[in-house]
Length: 289
Image 1 (tube, one colour):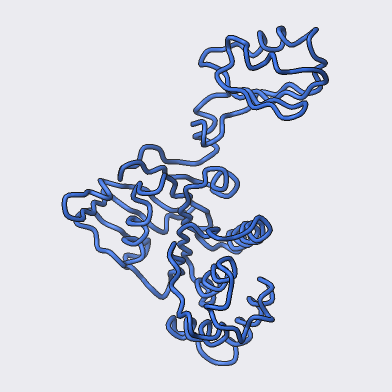
Image 2 (cartoon, rainbow, N blue to C red):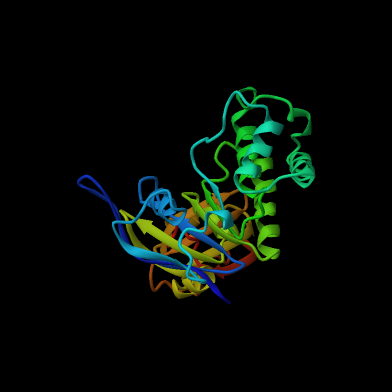
């Protein structure tokens, strides 16, 4: 797999605040890389350096062919709204495509196809300010993708979307990946990253604290999560000595075990108290890691 982007020891300071402190990671072609962390961790500042909005104080951001910040090859969706509120949707999207060098009848056709895909055809002549927050986010995402970028950089792309549209965006990103596009996805939603990402970069207080292939990271953390389905009253599971945390819903329990705990002891303690239908040991989630 070919490396398309490398970020090396990048630093960015604003006054006395070091927002990004020696961040390094790489992005492979045709993959989704999740840039994760709490709000204020340094994700957006890092993305703005990748897209050329900010210049790093030190360190380097390099492309596989030696180009720096090739803007025509990047599709960037910022966390903040970047739309002209008084413009009609159709006019705005054509304008955004033209900024990236796309012109002619093909652009109008592409706009119509994207509007149909996002169920916005009936809004094509509406002004941005007349749309809901979720629909504005969909318009901004269309504008990000119209010029068919090689690298798609998304900062909290599902902000403002309802669950149905979150699934639509999730499926779209998977399709783009299958087409060979490369995606850098910034989010504070660990569960969403776990569904989507091939690789993750976890940032805390401006530093990378964890990075690598998601499957490898989860496997390296060991298996300490038990999924149990049963018949009977499983409330006793919360009080077992090897259980650090328990989530019980109806007749299913997810148990996070203490380090070194023996799952067999959990099973033995459960037999005779409930009827076990499923007993499975799994790797921890990103939230647990």
